[in-house]
Image 1 (cartoon, helix red, strand yellow):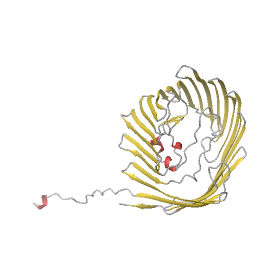
Image 2: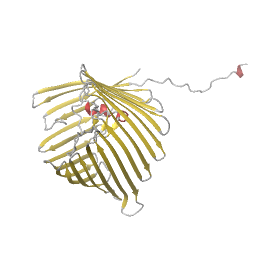
Image 3: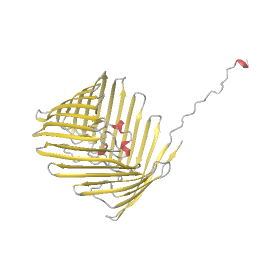
Image 4: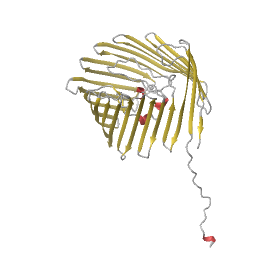
Length: 448
């Protein structure tokens, strides 16, 4: 009968999942360059949305990078090219998914892509064990840059990853690929990777590495082997050395102190040997270092390294004092290095401090003096005043060997309405350029 018929009572009906809105950020700017007398005009569009619950998609048309503060390289000496960090928001989004290698052995370095007309950046998790990313940057009618990567957790301790980086341009095609596997067993882990580049003019070449690491309580040990062919050339990467085979080994020990003035002590040592692939000598060296951290968070680091690079015999000693360690808002440091590099005496002094003189004002200064092949100096001063939740005034001044550049900016952004920027000067010029830029961004959403 009717009384025995099942009935639904106060049962929630699952809501139909709504499509994520598309956030659109059209921008435009107008300005004037007082040196050239030229008017500066530009406009473009950024967009962002979610694909499912864990994939992010970002697009850009005619992106504006000219008024973004680029990072500034120090005056440190290197036998090889150095690369400043990336500061452009389009490439910082999902940067961890796009990381293909590290240090001076990267198949992809976004700094290699200077300007482009259209860009697409997608990244996130495909399922609970798989993550991936895809980036495309197009110069209309000239060049297509592609980066794709994927990583799969095979189980709780092993993973397999693959990546492709390509520049497709008439007469300058370049392709790079990597496969890597890693596994962990207790406190030990091991990895191996194989890399290949194919360049339209230089042909095909290989690079590979394998390593073993130990990470127990208070101790770390690493041993790795690397070999790179002479013609290895990832055009969109940062690969500082070629034509060598190297063995590197390092050990680090650290111990917290239960009482007294010391909070933590740390010592480490490393040694490496490399030769050209034909057996000629290339480089060798060793380094020892130590660190004392006091309970008031003062940190003293000392190191000494000695070695040879081809025909040069090098040595370098360093002392660094910082207080308080790890505080980005109120901190000072001094750094001194002396030795012999590339057959010439090397001396470097550096001082820096970060100060918050008032609650919403942050300032920082870094000054470096180097005497090597010639005397060089560089000073960087920056300041930022947060006038409220959405408004700030900031600027940066850089002096390098007598050349001075500075700029000031006003920003009102971070709310739900239009965002405005005013920039006086060029943040990335060698010397000051008198130009004024006014920029507006008007965000809105498309819902389906």
